[in-house]
Image (cartoon, rainbow, N blue to C red):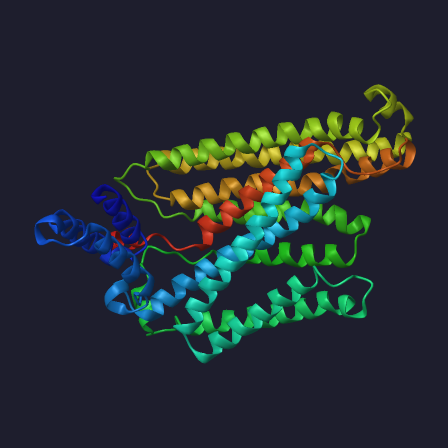
Length: 432
């Protein structure tokens, strides 16, 4: 029984904040060790530990080891990372679900997993959002209420028939609430770390502001993506295929060049692994995507024809235009990956100290970008095949769906690494 009680105590201690976790774990284990001599049941000590962990007030400065304003910002960052990740999984589940209707059982199971991750990420994000709001200003609470309402509106759209009049207004109402709530929450977050505030003083000094060129490139990318959703024209597709990746690549290059350097410290081994590993994954993604665009998806859309027959049946002008997009996609993302690899190795070889998290996030974002723009690269040739050959349907191969899920996972990992705060032990180490 004492062994089981020790296991329960360790689990209960693990749920406590890092600043008091070790102290209570040692205290409870010591109580269990002396419970027989004291005539106390070890199971009672374990039950008391679980009850204490469940009812303990965690958001106090002495427990957290930091001001409440800093704790609120940490919760807000987790809320941002989790809710954005849930959006990625929701969109990915919708896209993959449409591709997996006639696909293997494994792909359908993965789609169900994506839906579950959407639910878990949304709930965890809302919990973190409200933990931040309850420690912050009334403006932050208003933002939390608005964002929660927008999520509930979107969730109601899943059960309201689209033909219903109420179902027609769900999407615009949810979008308006989401934009309003995001603006309010951003204003509350920015105001909580103004000049002279406790939050600004307690944030580790190793953090850097993003270069203005990188911010500008991200704004341009966002504007172009918004225009793509409103006006799906050939001009917009060209902008999506070329301008957005170029803007992101230029911003990333400027970010690498402005990385802080040190003269005497070698880069950590984990940073080398991050650059080489993510670059290898990106190159493998481009190779798989090329095979899918040129072989697997055409055969999936026209299963009764050989690959040579498919190309021969397409109008020459449409075939040339479609191939041009595919080749440009392959060349661009291969070159972008090689630039990232060469730049990362160059920076690390000159004894720089870029964050391993930043390098990993940038590499994973490269993978996600290649997968996302694969759709635009294959759109023209896919439309030509589906309009020319039976069974006259769109879609693609199962490999395309798996690649899409890889891109979504990479994007989620990049979001978490970029936005979520570092662990408490890491923060304490930086302060000392």
